[in-house]
Length: 330
Image 1 (cartoon, rainbow, N blue to C red):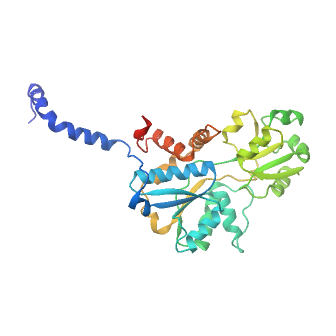
Image 2 (tube, rainbow, N blue to C red; image 1 turned 180 degrees about the vertical axis):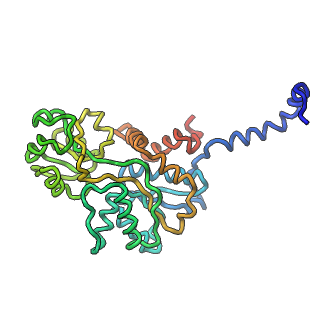
């Protein structure tokens, strides 16, 4: 039997001292958990995430690390100056490579694993994201038994040929065109083109798919190439089309319509032994790391005043309500 309204009102003041601590505990438990940096014994047993020393890749790796820490699964990030294919193979072959997970991009991972397999066919230009994942899974099974591919991030990273409006006007290239614009092909032999250092050899692909034989081809990081385009040290750069510097400097992005350089995704590769211990938050992260999230992350880390990768990862996780806001944020 329920109490009359008046009776309930009379009981409430007496029950408050008992109910308040319970309500506070329930309220605290309902929010996202904090992400604590592992120390002491937790640091000793923490999973290590190896990642190439690239700003965006490190940011994504820290997102996984902080989320794991918030779910009582200690993890740390360790940038490595090595190809992701070598990192994955070492994780499979060495008893203790010093890490438990590799945060990779599917395109270089597929290319590098296939280069180690004499019987494998080369990745054809323009592979879809599904084709790349199939290649990676096949190569992991053949060359790296004991490793497992987790769910890839939802975001698809595409590439574009970036030029200035001055270059476009000088060579009469349509500002809304793709890289297969005849005006671009006609101007190509006069262009010095830079390409992201982790992409495949561009010259055969440019010639085959775009009838383009550049005057000079060089490689570098995206930051280096953008700076060189802006300062006219080079005429064009092939970089990911979500780079915030494209909009910031009002550059023209000619889309890679023929998919010469493919599309790629971020994907974790782990020791099979720990895959069953992964908290559900790992799959949540994969689904939330969509195209919009990648643009946000790149904006957060861009420029001299940008956040470092761990700070950007923490900010994004808090905004996504996946971890609690740190106390020192004020």
